[in-house]
Every structure is written in structure tokens, then in C-alpha cells.
Image (cartoon, rainbow, N blue to C red; front, top):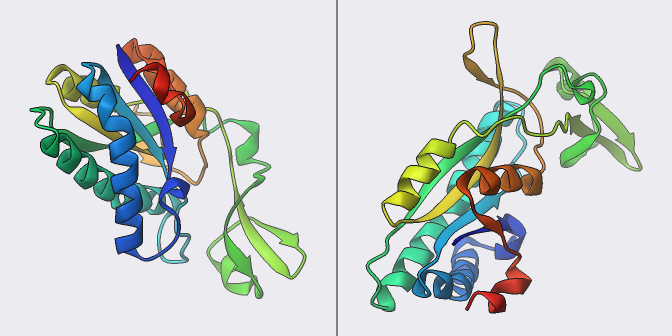
Length: 214
């Protein structure tokens, strides 16, 4: 069986990196028994992007996912080694293709980033804003996933016997040539992970249901 678990950066807290790594160690200890029992493992990781004026939103999603994914991959790899298992842990960045024609691109409602007191610079970089008590907040589209372009990379790692940290989900769309390009959107990690699980022939498992596997 391939177990697919949705993990968010909230599981590691928002403290300094050493504290977040300690939390990653705790997570690794909780899920390593899945591998020990002979199951395939995919940790479908979704992170809160660090919104910045000088960074495209898709790049912010990728950077956040890669940073947290590194901590989890390091902790999981070490935990598997300490248990005497030959299974390695590896991270791959995962994109989620969405439909640029989805209505939420015209009427974005998903809030991201901190509250802004002065919206002037945000308007200069064409951010969509929503007024809230005390200021304004950026909002982006929230379309459902159409495809997981990196499914093949995750599958290849699983077939090699690797425990996979699938870090994402970086929002992309196809242009008229079929080429992928990043967009500003938040993809529901549960929907994306569910799509990935179905295509891998895996089973979605919550962290609170690990006992059923171990």
C-alpha cells in the first residue's frame, strides 16, 4: 500500500528553524513506522507562502515548500537510518496545474500574507486587495487542481523504494503552446493530494489515523 499523508507547515510551528526541525523530527518518528511496515510513503506537503512585493507568488509557494520540505526530508531520512532501514527519503517539488479561466481568477477571495496598512505599493505591483479591519490584505484565486505535472517524479521515487516528501503545490497554467507558467493562486492541498493519491493507487491517510497502519 502507498500511504499519502497531507502535512502543512503548521505541523512544524512558526518558531526558529531549530525548533521547527525538532518538530520535523517528531513528525518523522510518527510516520517512519509506515515505512517500517513495508508501505510506500508520500508526505504531501503544503506551506504558507511568504508574500513579498519583489517575488512572484508561485515562486513564493515554491520557496516555502522547499524550505520546510528540506527539514522534513532531513528528519525522515535520519529517522529511517536510525531504525536500520535501507529506505531513503527524498523531496521533490510538486506543481498543480489549474484552469486560468476559473472564475476565482476574476474574483479572487483567498487571503494571503500579512495585513497591509498602506495599499499604495500593492496597487503598483497589481495585487488584488481586500479591505479588512485595520488595513488591506492580498487575495488570490483558489481554483481546483486539474493535473499534477510532477506525478511521474513522485511515482519514480516510490518505485525506487524511496519515502517521498512531495512539496507543493506550486500553481501553474498551460499557455497556448502547452507550456507551463506560474500564476498567483492557492491550491487546496487536500484536493491536490487526493488527485495524486488516486493516480498513484495510494490511500489518503490522516495523521490521526496512523495507528491503523502501524
